[in-house]
Length: 393
Image (cartoon, rainbow, N blue to C red; front, side):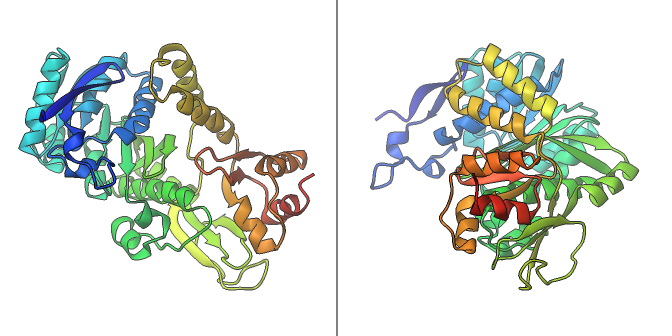
């Protein structure tokens, strides 16, 4: 059996370790068992990132893929995104480094893609100190991005962009609250919207790391998958603006596990639920403002329709971006799981679309969360959400 197979992802050819050698007893491929990590299930993440990077409208950009594995992200950015001039593909593992070099040659991209064999943090600090302008820093680890967030934030150019992927959803979402506290400096509990909490905890962490460096962030795009959360945000410099961000955009989700009440608050307030009188939990600090930027999402959708119909996950991404175009209009974006709320209320669960329509008829903004079929995002207060769940028509 051959050690390597050649595959195609996006517009690039890629040598990867033969997946047939790394299958579980049930036949499922386990990418972590291969000498160099490549996960085909993350193609949707990479496709979304390619479209997202294109939507930023960069020109002559330098992109760093700090944890590159096979080199697929860096290769795709340079091959598929106009405006990207140079990509730096790095991995600390020597086998990965050798494979990156082979894949660069395979795609005839040696003039645009450069391979590095460094610790990711050390490389980012070296590049910053050398004066290299880094327009987009991509952090896509196996697990938590927290060990690399500070160096990425420090190294990225003023007004540059960072893409973070996290696959430790149990820690981020509250399923493993102590792990979340260690990695993201936040207090967590289990909720009915774990993936939304994971997204906001990750952004809140990125915001606080930026603030420590007198910087602030502007979230632009995100993707929630079965095993991961991906965010793309802009980093700007300014201590006063960082202070304002912490005051306005970072806070807590006040959450009652007895009746389902929730809202966003700036600080830890009363521990008594204003609806049922039970004890509430405060989840956070986390990001409480919009998680997407309307103009960027609209541009990404436009480019997807025009330039990226060849993508393997095209139909899925189109659905995602159409949801997010609508989501960008909702502020604040308070999440509810309709099935769980119905259970709390002791009523049959209505169709999610009916609840959305009911809230809109009351003058509120409301959309479905694409990544959670039973969840909605709305700016309606709890009492009106309850009313629409009880009698949606």
